[in-house]
Amino acid sequence: MRDWRASRESEMHSDLFDEAVETPDPRALDLVLRVGELLLASGESTEVVSESMLSLSVAFELPRSEASVTFTAITLSAHPGGDHPPITGERVVRRRTLDYFRVNELHALVQDAALGAVELEGAIARLRAIKRASPPYPNWLIVTGFGLIASSASLMVGGQWIVAAAAFLATVLGDRTSAFLARRGVAEFYQVTAATMVASTIGVGLLWGSDQLNLGLQAGAIITGNIMALLPGRPLVASLQEGISGSYVSGTARLLEVFLTLGAIIAGVGAVAYTAVRLGVEVTLDNLPTVGTGVEFPVLLGAAGIAMTFAVSLTVPPRMLPWIGIMGVMIWVIYATVRSLLDAPPILGTAAGAVVIGVVGHALARRTRRPVLPYVIPAIAPLLPGSILYRGLLEITLNQPVQGLLSLSEAVAIGLGLGAGVSFGGELVRAFQRGGLAGAGRRSRPAARRSRGAA
Image (cartoon, rainbow, N blue to C red; front, side):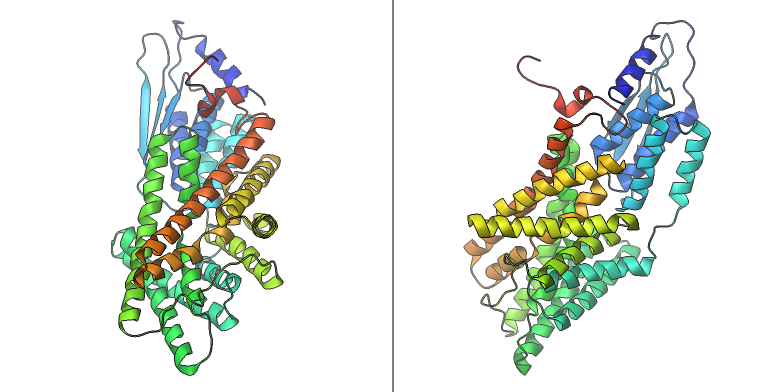
């Protein structure tokens, strides 16, 4: 498989100035564009989308193809050779929905086409079937999984079972509010703000009730769980991966998407927390829910639950869920061990866990011939900085702006550490294994080309 695409491309380029030139099949051009569009819209990185399109171009004999993939647009150009003008097509991604079931099926289609196991007509039929296919989970289960993310997170940070149940209810109600606004054409920024406000209001209400009845509930865990369910783990990892791979425009756009989502979360939680303080609700920093470094069974159960329910919300195929649960426990154990044994700060423990998950996830993806994102994105969810972000917002609300900004900066640094660690783990696997998605050699990867010094 090594250098498969490079060897095929050299054969196709050899007839650049031949007089007998065949016009590229427009069906193949359309297929490649539509596969790239669906991959990008379903959450795949621009580097993998570009590599997939070029592999399909070679498999279906589109001569001298060039693919350009940005955050919202895909362009493919094929040059027949001779005096014929190039043929160029473009697709624009107008709607994005993270759907790793479709990513997995499209990845298999590209692999089969590269290996010659499917002809053009068969590939077109498979693409139509993938677009029409229903996700592996019904809609009610996806919504339930979203709520269970918050429940698992609240258990991890010390919330009781009643708090976990309230976190589930709050997150589901927030998600339904967001869906209602989406149907009314409201921008996603305000959808996330409204979802956060609904969940935070329920959390503050339970906190007030707990104080009045002296129940001692960790009601803040509701807000922490909701924040973790809404944090943009996928765009964060993708932004760093694409920046490292040289896709600076897409990487910058995804990073802006991350900060806009964080801004929406901060606006929603901050507005509710400020209102609660003004109304006299006892919101203090003394007993805030915190992750800690424990490895007790409820904590490990929460880590596995966050990873697996996160995977369900992303429609990851069911057969991958056990591995994702194991990886969720793994990243937490590594994080807790590094922090306990070395007395290390959270950022170091986070980076160590993310690197291991990056190595394991990329190795599993290569072994099973599946895309890597469905493995690594849910697995890093237990370390998303929900509790630190909540603390920072409360510190700002309680007139401690310096401490609050430091906490928010720490939350951003931990998020970037997660993305960079996962990406670095993938680079380690790539450095010691051969081939790419469709057998491309390591030297042909754009990110590996030197821009300074001797070759």
